[in-house]
Length: 92
Image 1 (cartoon, rainbow, N blue to C red):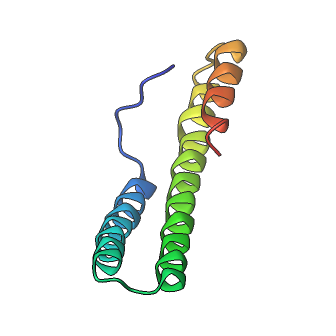
Image 2 (cartoon, rainbow, N blue to C red):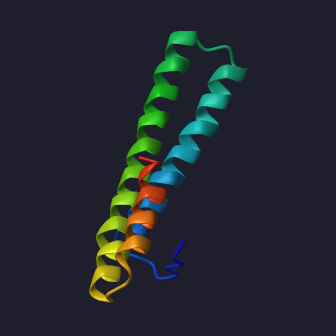
């Protein structure tokens, strides 16, 4: 798999989303420890799950848009690009 150490414009957004999710998870743990109703906890877990899914989607789409598209411009082998696309798309 190709290595792309550069940071893309969306990375800051993804990091912010993950930091918010981290804080939210800590609050959910506190909710469980304090005996909050199960429905309230489940609702918050659902919200964190959706936030993580969206962060992952933004990150993967950014890779496809910038890394794979850029590789096409560098005339990388089509087989390598298809393999890399398959590798990352399984996480969508």
